[in-house]
Image 1: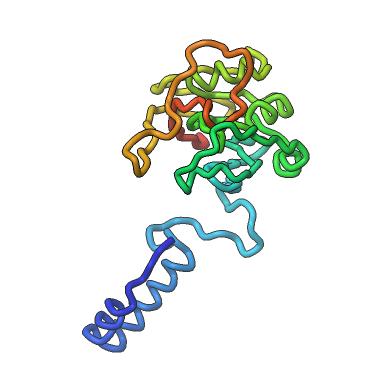
Image 2 (image 1 turned 45 degrees about the vertical axis):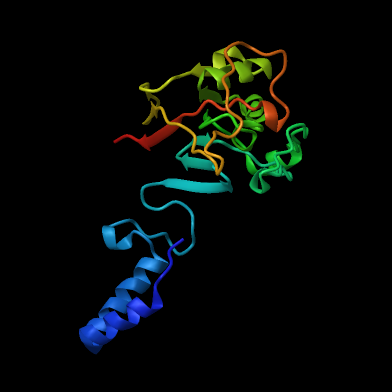
Length: 223
């Protein structure tokens, strides 16, 4: 989201003259309507869908993304089942059972080759076990994430445990892993911290026992 200071814009227009002001306004309009275009970014086709690079990004809300190109699909933190957690009101409902509406997930996820888990809070990871088993996707995440996937019945052969620094080559694209930490809340504490260092009896099903180890991802096509 970009906010424009109207008073600043008016002063710039008057000081620079009508011609300069019109040019600046046109440039500003382009930057607002097509962010990044002034820096050489590719504009979207009129009909939507992938640009000439052939890569399509779909946002699922929160940190959920689908990156699709050719016949490949990568998911990042795919989470669809919303509920009133109380988190934003600083009254987290620790014992709420996390919902899993498989019909809703099926509407949005048809296939996946890899699923990248950024961190293990419910609003990033809760739907991953179902999606992984539905699609047969490889799940890439930290020790905590891997142990939760094991507890949820994701096949061991589909789990890739990482800690940062890994560089993985796939068919036409690569995935690089680098570590990160979760941002701190208003209380200067990490929200629902902790690590899952062994396979639990069941995958966490409540916000208060989420696996919060973090990680950040880069993915791009090669060639």
